[in-house]
Amino acid sequence: MANFLIDSRKAQTYDAIVVGSGISGGWAAKELTQQGLRTLLLERGRPVNHVTDYPTAMLNPWELDHRGQVPLAVRNEYSIASRNYAFHEDTMHFFAKDSEQPYVQEKPYDWIHGYQVGGRSLTWGRQTQRWSDFDFEGPARDGYAVDWPIRYADIAPWYSHVERFVGITGHKDGLATLPDGEFLPPHEMSCVERYFKQQVSARHSDRHVIIGRAAHITEPKPIHLQQGRARCQHRTLCERGCPYGGYFSSNASTIPWAMRTGKLTLRPYSVVHSIIYDEQKQRATGVRVIDTQTHQMTEYYARIIFVNASALHTNLILLNSTTHRFPNGLGNDSGLLGTYMAFHSYRGRITATYDGLLDATTDGRRPNSSYIPRFRNVFKQETDFLRGYAATFYSSRNPVDNQNGVGAALKQNLINPDLGEWQVGSAMMAETIPKPHSTVRLDPVLKDNFGIPQLRVSVDYDENDRKILNDFFEQFTEMFTQAGFKNIRTIDTGRLPGSENHEMGGVRMGRDPKTSLLNRWNQLHHCSNVFVTDGACMTSTSTQNPSLTYMALTARAANYAVRQMKRSTL
Image 1 (tube, helix red, strand yellow):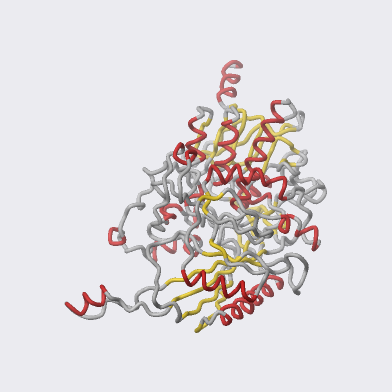
Image 2 (cartoon, one colour):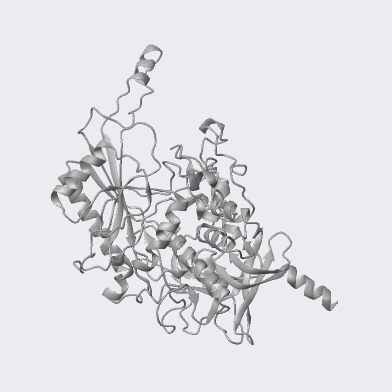
C-alpha cells in the first residue's frame, strides 16, 4: 500500500505547475519547458486545438444561423459576456455563460471569462505597447499605490524577447513615453489619419498620432514559420480564432511550442481549488484540482507554481489557500491580498465627420487602428486629476445605402456608390487608481458549482475617473475642431469596470512585504516558490494595453525561477 501511494504521488509530481493557459500562462509553460522543466499546465475549461477547433473561422455571414446576431434567449444566458465588444454569434463559444461562474457584485462589475485552452488569448484586442519609466515611476511620483520594484531597464530585454517570438507590427516613433520595440512592418495609416496626425503635430508638440502596435504578423520571420504561423490575412475575424496564426494566441504559439519539448502535460477541465502549503517546509508543494466533469479532487505537486488564472481568479485561488500559517490566504501577512484592484476605463468615445479628401477612400481591412499615447500628467502633474489616458483614432468611408434602385439603376449604384463623408472617431483608454477599498473577497456563505467560495467584487469608478472622462471630451473635441471635423459627438458609454478584460491588482508587486504581496521577481514575499505574473501582479495600470507587459514579466520570472531551482534556492 505504501509503495502504491508513493508511485501515485510520483505520477502526479512535476517540476513546475502553471495555473491558467491564457496569454501569461502560455508564456510560463513555454519558458519553463524550454529550460527543461517537466511542467503541468492546468486549464479549467475545455480543450481548443489550433485550427481544428475554430468552428466559425471560415464561415461567411450568410452561413451563420442568425447572420451574426445572438437570439435573446441565448443572450440572456450570457448577460455579462454579451456586453463585451467581441461577443457575437460567431464568437460566443469562446465566452462563459453567467451560470459557469457566479459571483457577488457589491458594485456593478462585468467579469468576463474565457473557459477554454488559450483562455482570452483567442479573443483579446491584440494591442501591444511597451510601458516606459513614466509608467513604472507614476506611483512613486504622485504617492498613489506603491512604488514599482522594477523600472523599464529591468523589463526592456524581456519585451524584446517576447516581441520577437510573438510578432508585433509597429513603427519606430522615437517617443520617450512609448518605447520602440522589435517591430515587423507597420500597417498603413489612412489619408485622413495622416491628415489628423499633421494637424495635431502642428499645434501640439507633446501629442502624437501613430499607427497602432499590434500582435499581428505582417511579415513572417523564421521564428514565426517555425511555429507554423503565417502572415495576417487582414480578414478582421480575429475573435473567431485564426487558422493562419496571423495574430498571437497561446493556442497558435506558446502552447504548441511547449508541447514540442516533450516536457508539457496539458490538463483541461481542471479547476484549481487552492494551493497546498507545507508548514514544516515553509513552502508550497502543489495544488488541489477539481475535475469539472467528475467533480473529483486530485492533488498535484511541484517545486514551483505559477498562478496565471487571470487577475480575479488568481486572487480567488490565493484567498482560498488558507492554512494555520496563512489564515487569510497564501502569503497574505500584510492583509492586502484582494485589495487595490484597478482596471482601464473605456467610457469615453467621440465621433465626427470630415468632408475633405473626398477623392480617396479606404480599401480592404486592417486589424488595427491609429493610436494617441498619453499626453496628460506625463512629465509633471498638470491637471486636477491623477494619471491620464490614451486613445485610438480611426477613420472610414463606407457607401451610403448603395442598394437603392432596381435592375440597371441598382447595378450602377453598386458599381459607383455614394461614399458620403469620412467617419472618424476616438475611444479612450484611461488609467484608474488602485484604491484600498477596491476589493475582491470570498463570500462566507455562497459557493460556486464546485463548492469553492464565490468572489465578492467591490470595484467602481471615482471622481478622478470622471475628471479624466471630461478632460478626454474637452481635449479631443478641441483637436477634432481644429482639424476641421464636423458633427462632433461625445459619448459616455457607461461601460462597467471589468468589461474590457483589463482587470488588474490584488496581488501587487512592491519592495516592502508590508505594502505588497510580490517582490521584483513576481514571487510571493512569504512563499517564494509561488509566482504570480498575470494581471493580479500589477501595481498600477498605466494607459497602455497590459498584455505585452504580462508576457514580458512572465518570461522574466520563469527564467529567474529556473536559475534559482538550479542553485537549489527554490
